[in-house]
Image 1 (cartoon, rainbow, N blue to C red):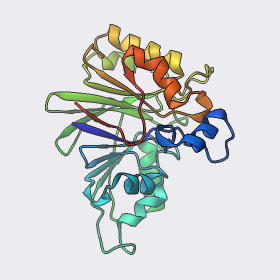
Image 2 (cartoon, one colour):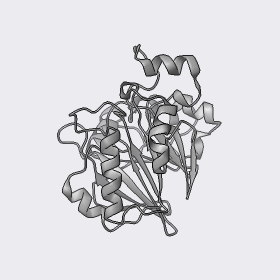
Image 3 (cartoon, rainbow, N blue to C red):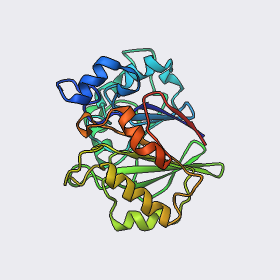
Image 4 (cartoon, helix red, strand yellow):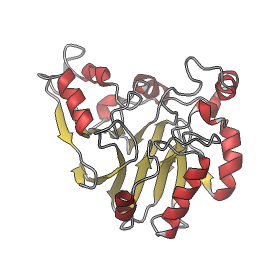
Length: 269
């Protein structure tokens, strides 16, 4: 499997639109890996994970063709992950297609958002639930419940398996509650993509991870055997408010065997 990180930024990206933080200023001045669009990924060229407001720019930057996507799998309904208005461009009258070329998979709020906006459009939409695996093409996808999202939303992180390989794509996790930890005991990961949104700024907010919480989550996953010495660990969903440039995050996490993710990174397992 190949996971292509199309975006590795938090909700407002880096540099943030209205921000004058040190990290935003650095990204504007230096570009490169410090510029982070809103988090999204593409698996093996055809399973799109999240469809946020930067999708068009990511497709153009990476030389992709959205018509190759067989599925769009959502994690949750926050605006940086779901740009529902953008889905319409897959269909007539914006082109000649009378059916979208992809199936939409998402939680309760995703499904509600799509059908509220497009009640009569020919989208194929599948409701996903935490801890209930489903087949997507020839992949097995298992959503696990994140500690994130609006009240009443089943916010999800995604375990994806194929051919004896497995990955966990985990943006917007918070510190998982015990049912999620217990469920993870049955998995051995080849790749862990895990958010480090708050970076070096330790906050009491429990819907995202700072760098110390990131380390605690990885350590617990090692202790339970879900992460092993051969698991690739990559960060994503970085905020400019986390007070870490790409190089600073690398200096902190690189010696621990963690790859700091960046827009355009491809990871093979």
